[in-house]
Image (cartoon, rainbow, N blue to C red; front, side, top):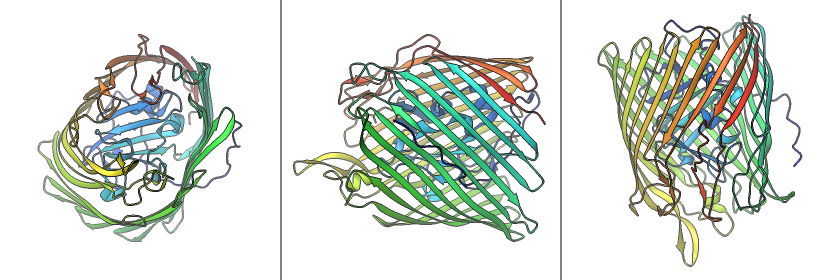
Amino acid sequence: MKRSILSAAIVAAVSPAVADEAPGTDSDSATLEPVQVTATRLSHTVDEALASVTVIDREEIERLQPRQFTDLVEGRAGVSVAGNGPFGKTSSVFLRGTNSDHHLMLIDGVRMGSATSGGASWQFLPPEEIDRVEIVRGPRTSIYGSDAIGGVTQVFSRAGREGPPRVNAFLGAGSFSTWEAGLGVAGGTGRTDYSLSVSMFDTEGIDVQDDVGDDDPDGYDNTSLAGKVAHRLDNGIELFGNVLYSEGNTEFDGFEDETDFVHAAMQAGLRLPVLDRWDTELAVAHSRDENDNFAGGFFSSRFDTKRDQLTWRNDVRLGERTDLIAGVDAYEDRVDSTADYDEDSRYNVGVYSVVRTELGNHDLEGSLRYDDNEQFGDKTTGQVAWGMQATDALRLRASYGTAFKAPTFNELYFPGFGNPDLEPEESRTAELGARYSASLAYVDVAVFETRVDELIDNRLVGGQFLPVNVDEARIRGLELEGGHDLGPWNARVSLTLLDTENRDTGNELRRRPPASARFDLDRRIGDFSVGGTLLARSRSYNDADNDERLSGYGTMNLRAAYRFDPEWSIEASLSNLFDRDYVVARDSFNDADYNNPGRAAFVKLRYQQQR
């Protein structure tokens, strides 16, 4: 279907970001420990965080050459992915074995996701517009509110840095009649930093299901605009805004066979010093998750979510070793749909605080949040964490937290199906972890247990299937993550072991593999670089009854790059080297697998203007 024209001049949000080493910079020497802000809304290095955190910076994104966002996160510690095919098809990103809608997505601090289905549209995130990704594993509801039972993934759009304007551009093509292109500029003065870019991705894709619908490839296109600006005034006030806006079309098999989508995050605000030890930030935001569905070329249905958000955050330095963060965030979800929902809007107001203090070589952290929701009333959640610097290189940590997930509009109000008496799903999680970090290498290990109560499932009630609070789940796991940057070598390894159980039936949770692993290895050879990624996962089950078994598999991806000029480079990748046939999700209704791509090759020419 014909797409709408990309919106212009949208003002949006910015979150504090830390400048990383520029892509292509020689990193033979030790690099600074990555800084993250998602775990507590306060900047700490990954070593200092009292949570399990993975950071993927821009340099790593370009090195891995992903075609879609899920390529970046699949197989990372605690992460598993199940999609209804590649390239813009519905994707579930499970974190620590919890449901996909127990995993909160933020874009520059803006809450994302569909209020009707409850899940986030991971499949529409454009990798070329992303500066960094922070994955925080474990409950974060006491800081961010509903949905963060399994954790939070925050995506930061690309930002400018002080210096003259620098142009960047790329042009690529590959298998499945894929092409992509992009152009951007970024820079900064003493007071103003800015970045603006646009990118396009188009592919004919593959036939995502055999013997369902037609036999034609199911294509996907995405046009994205990203912009970010920050301006500092003489009195110390900083004004900021940014936008990440994507729109396009994705095709699939079935009665409804294509969707026009809009996926957008926008925010604007200001930061100002109130006192020497007190800074405050006020921001307004707007997000969209819109889907217009078509059947045989004719409009069929609409499910649009619009969310307005207001946040007020205060950072207070209580002493040399104690920090307090306190704030309020409020948002309203509005649903515009062809389905006649009994209710089409609801608000939520949350008040939260986080305190962190250092006591010698010990760190203590506590968070508490109160949410008032128009639909289900109030909910209070909290978390406590402890850390100890056992040696110069070894750090120990432990935490316990509670979380909840609000029912979706589909579960509450969908015509003929919704149950307005549903209660939120609730969880409690305990974790022990250790991190060994030397100048050029690190190893992080964590064990955890999560129990989720009041899980929502569809049951026969009075002759009708309705969503009800019936189930309890228990999830135990071990995560291992490590890496090193030694001379020309760069390596990352992740391993996840899960034991999931629906306590009501004794079955494993659907589409959660008990074991998964990822290994990335790259080497620089002068102006050349070569690398590969090995992904492996064990068998899982597609259905709650554990009748539909999904076999385990392993794939290997190769990549290479050559910088033939200080400002020009060419990249090439070969995915699924051994042309493996594998399945991560099935369509039980049509008794058909969702297909994944076989061997595929891609090339890209990249330009990055030097200062």
